[in-house]
Length: 125
Image (cartoon, rainbow, N blue to C red; front, side):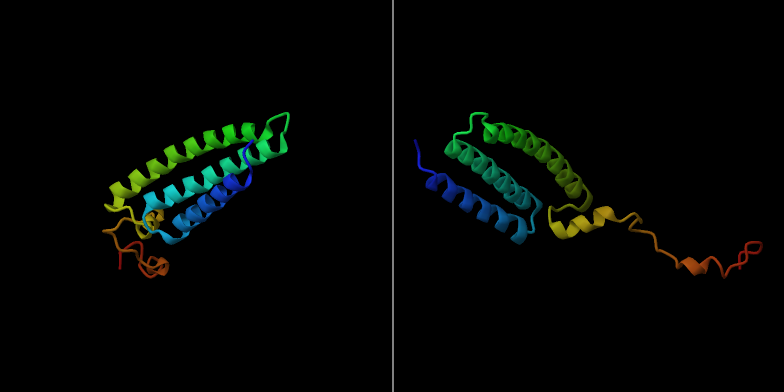
């Protein structure tokens, strides 16, 4: 049987690299890679703890299968958002992602809310 120190060290390295990738990167694809590293470190931790405790129900391995399923759905959805961001702004920088939530068109200028109250509806002045 393998000693648990090796996989736990690998979990710590993967979690550290994933956290760095999520927090320090500005490119959306690199942030997604960091998130995947975090998810894989959790999966490895679940399997390692399951093997170390010799659980007869194999709870860690079953949870890992659910985690892999959720990770696959997350990748599909995240890549769709990345493609939308790239089509909309022409780059995959996270600073450009704030423009996806804006509802106003770029060419239009917004008027103050009280500007309509000053005009007369009959004459338009």
